[in-house]
Image (cartoon, rainbow, N blue to C red):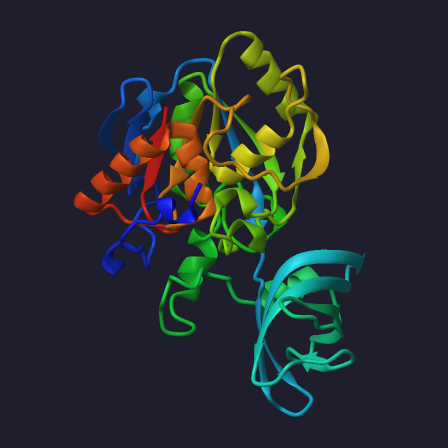
Length: 348
C-alpha cells in the first residue's frame, strides 16, 4: 500500500492555533461505521452516544515541560527537546535522549547550562537524537516545571513565549496524573469535570491506562510503502483494575470506547490469544494500518490527524479508509479545526 494514498490537502487556516474557548465546546463529528453516516454535534453533546455499561478508557499521561533553552560553554544557544527517558538515576539526575537545535553539533563531554539549577552533559551524539545526562541542584522534575516550556507541536506557530499560561493548563487533559509525555493525548483535551460527571451518571465507567507519548507517534513515514515503516517503541502500563473492568464488560457484551489513538495502541497491544486484556507494564511497536483486526475497542474518540501520519492510518483501519476520507472531506467543507487543539471525531 502506498503512503501517498493517505495524503490530503488541508487549508492552513484550518490548523488550530489555539484551544476552543471551553474544552467541551469544540465540535464533534460522529461517524457511524455500520450506517456509513456522518453527523455533527458539539462535544458536550456526546453523552447520549454512550450506553449504560460502556467503558471509556483514557490515557492519564501528563505532559512534562520538555522544551529547554540553554547555552554551551562557548555561549552559543542550544534548544533541547526531551524525547525519551533512558535512566532515572535519582530525583536530581536523569539521562534522556533529546532532539537538539544548535549552530554546531554537540560532542560527547560538552556541557550545556540551563540556568543556575540545571546542567546537561552530552553522553553521545549520533545522527538524530543526542543523549544527555541532566543534573539539577534539587528535584529535577520540579526544576523542569519551573524553567521548561510546554513542547507544543511545530504546526502551532505563535510568537515565542506567547500564551504560556494558557498552554500550561490547556495542553493537559483533566485525566493527567502521571508525568512522562512530550505531547498530549489530544482526544482527552475535550473533556471537563462536569462532562465527566454527566458521563458517569449515564452509567459509563471511566478507567485509565498510561502511555507516555514520545517522538515515535509523530515521526514521519519515510518509506514509500506503508508496510515498510517501523514504529518507534513506546512503553505503556495497564493497571489490573483497568484490565479486569475491560474483560468483564466485554464478557457481558458491553462496549470499550478508547479515548485517543494512544489508548487504542496500548489496548490492542495488550490482548492475549484468548482475547483478554492483560495488565502490566510493557512496550509496543504495534503499527495499526488497514487492514487490521481490532480485538478490544468498539468505538474511538479522536482528533483529526496529519496527512500521511500513522495516526491517520490507524483511524482508517478502524473506520475504513473510504469512510474516513468522506469524513475528512466533510470536515474541511464544514470548517472543522484540525490537529492537537482542533475538533474531535467519534467513530462508532
